[in-house]
Amino acid sequence: MVEEKQINEGRIVAVCSAKGGIGKTLLSVNLAVALNKKNLNTTILDGNFQFGDVSLAMDLQPSFTIKDVMEEMSENEIDKESIRHYMTTHSSGVDVLATPERPEYAELVTNDRLIKVMELFKNQYDYVVIDTGVGIHDQTLEIIERADDILIVTNLEMTALKNTKLLLGTFDQLGIRHKVRLIVNRFNMDSLIKAEDITEMLDEQPISYIPNNFKLASQSLNLGIPFVISQGHSDLSKAIFKMTEQLTSDQTKKSTKKKKRPKRWLGMSKGADGV
Image (cartoon, rainbow, N blue to C red; front, side, top):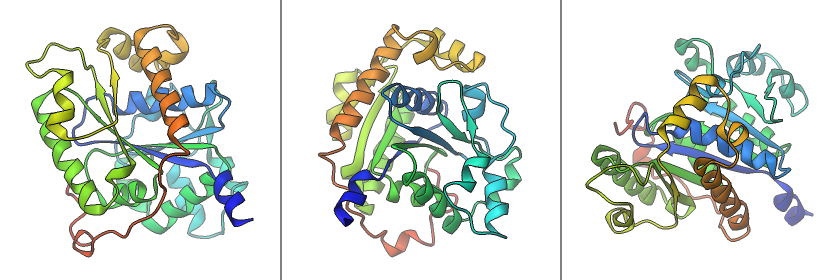
């Protein structure tokens, strides 16, 4: 019975980056919608608790946010039924738990309650996509250590690659690099660095490549319509669908063994964002 329960649990996909402005949120949103299109019950948690943009990218005006969940948990026990009251459902069918409306409310999101929310989601969704904050923070560490898959988004800019290499090294120290898939966004952009150099530069596989279509990406973000819905046959959408297929087909091959965080990280995680 224990093995059956583990198989039926949902999977947490943490989407991370070591630099802002490289398409992490847009990728998270479109990945969640693409997973839902495969008849996989999917939710997305905006894990950037100060300046998250998931609601903007999906053109949502949520009535409740994770702030309300935290306040409820401070007074009452919450379960997988009651937490649904705080979710906002997108027209695609993806459920969204939005970031607080003001950055100072991020302080209400405590690690123990965040972990409880993730556990509740795992028990009611097939996939839980979490768009994390940029870099390494205390709460980001809690998320990635409990994630089944970690997607690190980068591009061909030197600053992004430098910080991504540092982030990969940190994940190696934490014993979680085996859960990583590298996502190279705008891989065919004009750059002195070529996409085929990335494997050697970062010593990382597997890698998924997202093409450069800045016009469509910008339009999707500004209108709040995921491009896998509005432009399902575009090169961007095809890349997301391919990545989704790889992610779901790999789930039986990946190890979900949890490893302890080295103690020296416990006191230095806050504010070390790698940017």
